[in-house]
Image 1 (cartoon, chains in turn purple, cyan):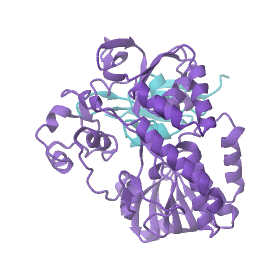
Image 2: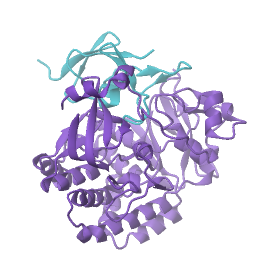
Image 3: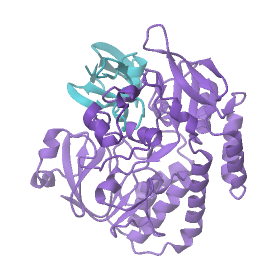
Image 4: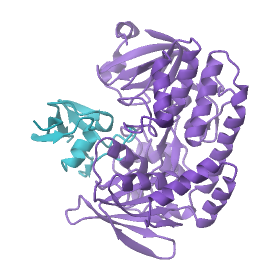
Length: 424
Length: 81
């Protein structure tokens, strides 16, 4: 069994900040992340080694914190013990912690509509991640649609990567976004960033109050020909090779649920020290509220300091600003009710099991739907369809059980003695 | 010698650049990652190991999430049936 004073799950900005702060104060820190390298989503990939990302990653590397990549936590079999699956060895490991920091980040919210399962349709952050992973979008026509600040950022990114961004369609109304901009008056850096993206987008139309209703297949039935957008009064087709579509972010909280942490709505409840309702478990970044990079960094640092028994009072002002920003984001990018109608009866809702919306007719709650239709019973464990059904029908997800990610049976059957031998 | 590396996608040799994610190699080769239960071709959706749409057979092993996997010289990748 590997043991550490502080175990951090997730090596995005929040996890890196927590690990760095705790390790610099002499704690033995172990960071587990399922990606091939540290950085999480926003700091994914190479490039821009200067700047905040480069500095943070260098400081993290020097801090003495140990990092295990390709490592996915799937169970909490006993108090203060995690089981994780290692992609490279195909084996499970057991990790003992004194204090645990959950920095599990967020994922995109997807809403089902006809054609959203076609090749060529991706999440918004997803397409950015794939481009960073070597996907060439040069001269490809891309429509970016859905909701959230990511739309502008990724639109600008794709354009700089050589894509022809046809348009950016944001479901939030002009009025809500104007209110959001005004609410940022005290944060000129964030206002400037938004402005920078708008400038980087050049003449690309940023259509507010617009959303996709159908992704249109090419003649081969497999590729994308375009997307039908609407503003609620009329709809029109925009030709594109790729559609990047995601409806803001939702937190990854499966591990916090498995640990029995208390929640406020969709988010993990934390105190000013980032401590959850479980005294030895901390939570930082998006699972406590979708607040972006600054909020993640300051929350991570607070948790790291508190784990090393250092005061973090001087950081509270920044942390409060982060919380205010998260609340403003939630208000500005709240989903409009019309989006419930883009899921047509013929649209696949559960992509793992190919369950159509029409098949869910007559089901009154998620559990029943699972039993009757297999909706949400596939490999993603309802991570994609669950939040969509929460929005469409107000269905609550059923309880989280181990393994929180599918693992090979052999890894699941491994006893703790075997896991002890598998040293990091 | 050209840069990058050679991998096999559905039996065909493909050259990819260093640092290419397997899901991307499949996209660039026009190959699906997996076939859905109703027979649709699927490619990566979330790009971050959440949605499991990018599962493919890598070096004979089923259900590998190819969006979190880097290409390695000589790797064989097949569309998951």
